[in-house]
Image (cartoon, helix red, strand yellow):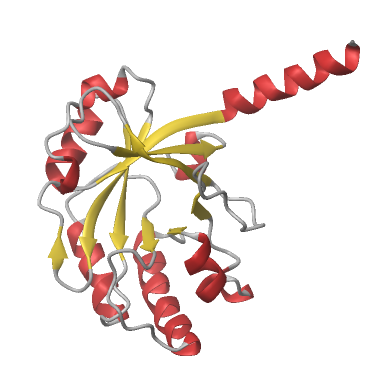
Length: 214
């Protein structure tokens, strides 16, 4: 009985440690951030940029709305496999230049929606390192890497990227095979929340908001 109670206590502590969040872009449309906060969402990663020129048209609106509602905000860049790494980093940096009190930035690394060209392994790693270092130099902290199993196992399972915290896609239908403990887990890509008309990605933080710089 004592052992069962101990296990239950550990499970409760584990659940308590998970802070809920979402990640969004203009695809979610106009968001009622106060309604989102009421559903115990405490952080949001918002798309800021993609590739070398593209900026999310709702980025600033979403940042302002989320922060006003009391939600901690981070920004992410969707990394394009076909575009110059340094220019992508600069696009991300410029997109965030007027924003304050943001969480550690994130870089989205995945095949879905990306260009068909797959760069050679060593070239990709060298170029990605360049982009990540530029982002780290500017913001003073290494960015978080959002990725999927497929992308991680092909490109990131290497000592070169060990220092970067992971944000891994880990939904019930596609449980992760990545053995490195992530900082963030994306646990649902079709969540329904009041305040958003369509689906939204739901995430959990395995720690506290201070781990994200919040």
